[in-house]
Image (cartoon, rainbow, N blue to C red; front, side, top):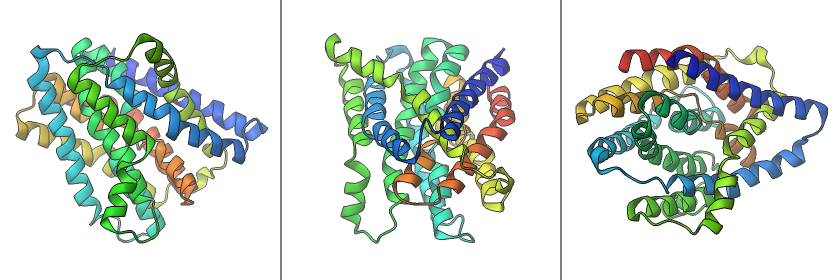
Length: 304
């Protein structure tokens, strides 16, 4: 049943990307309107998504497992950022930035709640919400750092990483999660509705990039290297980290599964915004998504 659930989610992801592909091929979405969609995703929809995620209420009975899951996520993130300084040195600067970003950013937000709920019910949703804090910090901070080409001081890098709409939304979401505060229903409803657009709109945008992609170039060394690290080695790192921290049961399964999801679809969104190699970023996302059809169900089977 789990295998089928994961395949269904992946099928939905592919169909949404196909919608974007068709829209780009037929001219419904052109390069100019795509840039508008990208800005709308980064500056409006995604901040609403992370604020809504912060409204999750913690159950005291699973607080310990949740905290270990949260710590595991940040330890894996820190180790990945450190490893990024030594990886991918045999490629171009443009490719290396994208590969480094693909290492820290994943599609775990898309797969998180549905799979966690199917496996562990309400407990799984809470554990995923906690684990995704580290993922969101990585996506909306390191994205701005890795893709910036010009030399910047440490203070400028920190400002670039932390002062942007998605990260501000993350801080607000963390505040709500820590305090248990809730927004008035009048404000919460539009935020929730915008949040529900996150996966569909991002996947449609990804599909528009696929329309411009030459799949004959998909098997280059750099893309395969990212696929190996993203889908095999990083989940192994999460598994070992979780075991060392004493994480077991649902928390360990979720940590490994979330770490082993495909490269984040925001890779090409940032590439487009900062004038990087959008075609290569798209290949990385497409290839990791393709191979994840095999690796994600296997990770759940072995770790659960």
